[in-house]
Amino acid sequence: MARPDKAAAVAELSQRFTSAGGAVLTEYRGLTVKALKELRRSLGEDATYAVSKNTLTAIAAKQAGVEGIDDLLVGPTAIAFIDGDPVVVAKGLRDFARNNPQLVIKGGVLVVEEGQLRRAPAGRRLRLAPGHDETVVTDLRRFYDAYGTVAFDNFPVRGLRDAPLELG
Image (cartoon, helix red, strand yellow):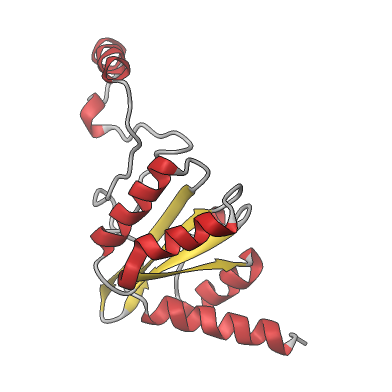
């Protein structure tokens, strides 16, 4: 039998998944309480940011009909539930991550019909990439042009800090 406090936490998370316009999962390892407070402030009125236990999040997501986030629930997880404009929230996360490299954006989902969270359709992604040295891009482009069968501009080059954020 589930403990009442855990059942209440699952019910609250499930309700947030159902009512929010979207959700972005992040890893906050290494961030101080002061930095987390600053992150919450940078998201403004458009989102709420809460630390969550992975097992309870998985149960709540399943109850809310959100699929495909189990692989993101590794390590310390916090969720930005989007209530306003997802682009404003994405920019807030991006700007905060530029100054605080400990924040890792794992991924997210976005509402696409009648209040139900669905996985973002393939090909529609909002990419939050950190700044980079343009010479690296030039070298990669040359490599793909010479050896690849996929054009560089159409291939999502991924790293730990610049994985595409699926918001739809």
